[in-house]
View (cartoon, rainbow, N blue to C red):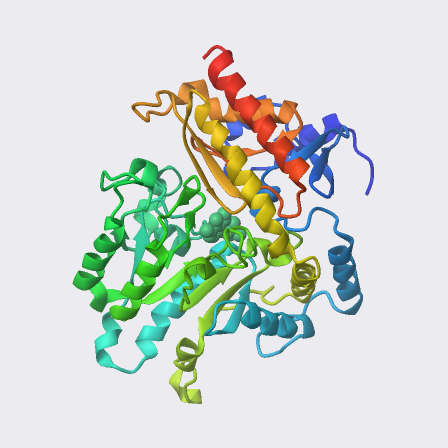
Length: 458
Ligand code: PMP
């Protein structure tokens, strides 16, 4: 690629690019961070400054940046074929990957439908669930047209996935565009909507779900859930048994369980899939992010045979699933995913994670000593540190102080990239990080939170 001066690129970025989830007025005022290169656990900007990648480049990187095995698999596939459609055709990597995904995902998920992002994986799950009940045959199921969504849920940015979302900050503005859902409370234990705490928790959120399904099951196609952790809401870790409880209710009330493993899948929680912690077998499972180890866009929506069977009509019955993006099952992305999964096995990544998770979890405890840390939530190698202005009242700082953004900038000055979600500082280390790198990530974050919240003027 041609060499461009940093100032030139900064100017063009500000002139031409609209950044997602970014307050553009603030962006226009600040010096942009432009990443030019990656290597292992690190990213490098245009000036060659080195940063530890504390968010796995938006929760995707598994084995590190520029992993030669994945790069090689991509190049080898490019030498064969860059793209061919899956509409009425097949290709080699998408076939091999589907077989592999069926092997590693919870039992019963035997069919793979490809797309390109987490949002589309969820969108597809919703459409399949809806069409499934319409095609089941029995008249009584035809009324199953709605979904149960959770408060604080995040499932992506397309209209369907936003409809089943529940984060006011992101979703409220679109209310007029969305389809109606039945709302269940979020298992947000720090701010329990049922006014319980972790010690007094009797899992009333599961009981709430029970009464909701008892009342509405005849009109409910599925419950959409982020297993174990509601990520984008600030790493809200559900109490143990919550997911299994919801699974049991879905079975009892004839409702599909749609597990959105986009953020928690592929090792993030310490098992290959979060559902495995509670031995849960969903009816539909949505995968993206870590599926290619952070190399190329790819997503998969996995379904059971029972669901798939309902789409096998006679030719004149119109049971076809009329959904298919141009790049569905892209062979290069599938080749990257295959190489990613081979590395999981070769490096015994999941087994190796356990020591790192134990260290991460133990070291995070000290954050609670900080004056303005209200809650620390962690599962596997994902954590959320909730910043509050007043610990006793659990009140956030006033927005005008811009505390989370300042913490991120302070960390960046010290060589760490992190990103806040509202008032929560999110840590999503790359799964291949060493213990020393994890320690560095935690030390810089701790110092940045302390400096901005305790030492600097508001
Ligand atoms: N579901 C969950 C649980 C997510 O965390 C995300 C993205 N953070 C998505 C869906 C959407 O994925 P994508 O950004 O790839 O569309």
